[in-house]
Image (cartoon, rainbow, N blue to C red; front, side, top):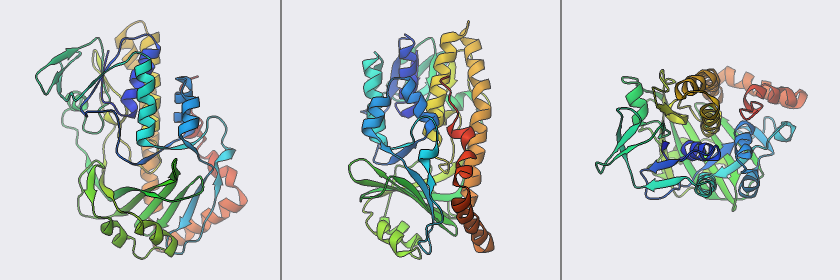
Length: 375
């Protein structure tokens, strides 16, 4: 089998299939398996997949255990609530540096026998389970998995004409050196928000998002000037401004809304992760849904009588789940950016829930965090 894409979804898919005894080749257009500096949250539903693939000891050593989520009024600096993540049952919630997580998955995949072909860019797929590389080479396999992200070549082949729309929101990703408690802080401002959380090595991951009418390019590899985001949050509380003032490098990220792919597969080609269902980053589920996809797809292919049955089963299982998660992320986008009386009421509600029923708030996410695709 052939996996296109050496990101989190592709590596997990390659590893999951290798664990079933399949011969797997992974194709990645970059010269090495890595990722640029940024953080990622692996929530319990993603962590159970890592554990099922034998990676819990490595994850515990390389990640930061998340202890809480804390919404903060980004204008006043007042903490609105603190939701204790130790109340969650099941696998731990952790923060990772993306490069560290990819390195962990790559090491496991290589040890499991996955063959990795770097510097190979796929320019077309088909007919059937084969791909055409930029250098003219054709690579064939029994199954081709497109885990090549929002600009997936295979997604375009299976779903011609589907387009994305700009959300009117732009984000910046940054990392600074700073000590911080093991919690995700969500700084809420009118039309804007910031998420901060610690990474190993004394680093702090920062994602800043603002609403704007001007279009920005999709993908978070576009360098930008730190002054741009610092000006955008010039009216934030002193503590948040001090954090943002330490940023010396940042990358701009235009947020686009994509439809869930109508067709996830054909006879022997199938989509996984963002290639099938890109999601906005307001629920921290992009990587976690890809982890789930990888495990479900590998198990379906291992258990079904035919490949066609396996791929059909995979799509049936995954579409309702990812559709619900994407809708929840889109709802958070609006909640984070409230202004005027609605903002005042929402903040009051958070304070009340945080004091009176913090467990109830977390139980609202049982459908997400408590979902275990490995059972």
